[in-house]
Amino acid sequence: MAQTTTNTTTRENKPFFEINVTRDGSQFMAVRDGLEVSGFVSSRLRNVVEEIVSRVLDTAREVPPNVHHVANGLTDFIAANTHLSDYMSTQISVKAGDAYMTLGLHLIYDIDRNEWRGSVEATIEAKWKKWEVKLAVKKRVVFKGINVSAQRLYTELIDAARHAYSVVIVKEE
Image (cartoon, rainbow, N blue to C red; front, side, top):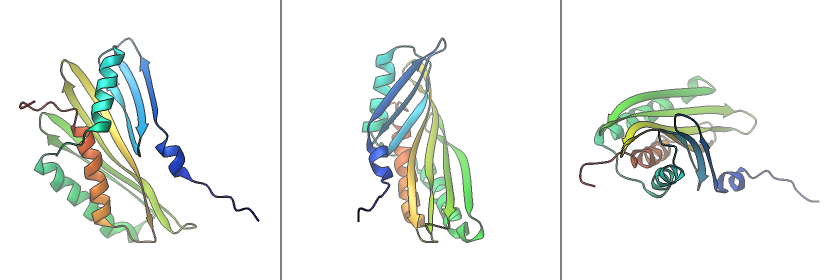
């Protein structure tokens, strides 16, 4: 007897890139290797959008210490309180270099599958060369069982933050 299984990993790992040019700039969305990048840049030039998206997907630069501190607090809070509810969501903004970054966690408990599903997200507003950029980097997460690993959640959140932070131009570059 053939067994039917649904594999969401195949769909999530399929590369995707889309740009929508508007009067004010360009909206974009890209998906690759489990990372979803979406946002807006004040440029209407396709090569600027491609450069930004490429940098975000290909670079994971170290974030400032305060971002680590906030991510640690958020993940500890979520992991410690998952027994209280079947839906957990939190976010907080922090200064990251010359930009503002918002870290977010969203989890829903699926009782039928006995797992927590959701996403970690880092959004950032920064100046890229002479253009304004607003983007979000999202990663999907799944935790089997009723417990959520704070360490794994932290690792995934910091990974998303490192990719988002790659658009911030640091003086040494």
